[in-house]
Image (cartoon, rainbow, N blue to C red; front, side, top):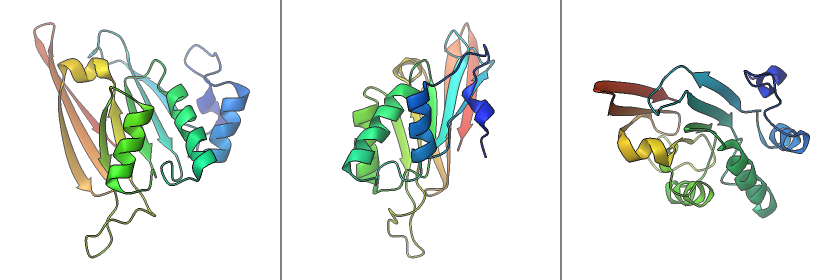
Length: 168
């Protein structure tokens, strides 16, 4: 699990305001914020991961709050990984496209033992910012539907081929 220390960025400044922090504590785990020394996009790659406990299937007020939380999470981030989004594939994609316009949204939803969608459990999304999407080749690979998803990013940067594998 993520500890309260995850709320402090590398520069020791609070990552979230108190009210936003409370929303996360009520709406799911506190997001994992990290910095990777990967210069794929001209600066340090900023990645965040969040277990949202049913981001898409919440009731209307909670759904609105989730959208606002995601819009705040996206600030200065290049890649976002979400777990436990729940919902049908079309609803998950539509919600994330609404919350993150211009981002490349790669969803994976759970299926039951017969291969039918199971919107009440699991579900993951990897979202890639417009900047990376504009120059990277993006190749998704669903490993276990709704449970494990991989996205490969590759680009020619400074004359060198750069590859990055995202797994959530």
